Image (cartoon, rainbow, N blue to C red; front, side, top):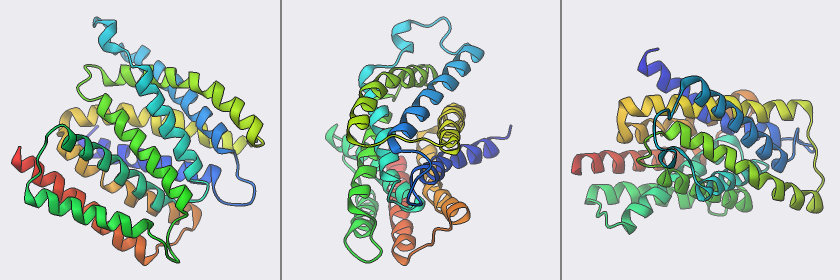
Length: 288
């Protein structure tokens, strides 16, 4: 399959996670499924799909088990990402949620680079300042501002995913490690269920379960498998740049499937955040 088509399918899959999450847990007085159940089904179905992919492709064969496997800390970061993601979409529109998620992931990874001694060029600083300023404007109080608690939950989700991504850099077999981490993350579902059953009612319609399975098995499991194939060919910098399309695709999906509108704040902040990150990414590539 042509590389361009694979890349497009992967970005659509990533954006579809936001659309599916919002469809399942968000609109209406009675959502199709509660956020905790959605997270649990998504993680478990993702683990099953990735385990099948590893078994079919023979990924990791002949390598040291120490290099193949994931870790409990990475699994917890994955779990935290999924749970915070689901709870955030109870009150966030699709495009805003994806934009906050994306910005938080990038901020986490950039912050870690600074901590490790990376010194950005003036052009990189300009891009980062523009993106961060636009992000602050997006979530600041106002008539069109997102729900503050939901925005905070999505930021936590992005930080968790950024930490997960940082822990996975340089792994010899990322597909196998991701499958292991998904399987490990299922262990955290049990205590989550206990807490949720005490705090709030659990409900799940058939359609809600199908959306959670689609998100876990297809747009997460198969999506990540496609992403690792694409990333090997386009490189990390180009990979970061093409991911700029995900919030835009998610916002379009929210408009098409959930009749969500575009506010001026969302449109302008999207351009500034994505443009700032793109500028910083390209400037860093030239410096390196």
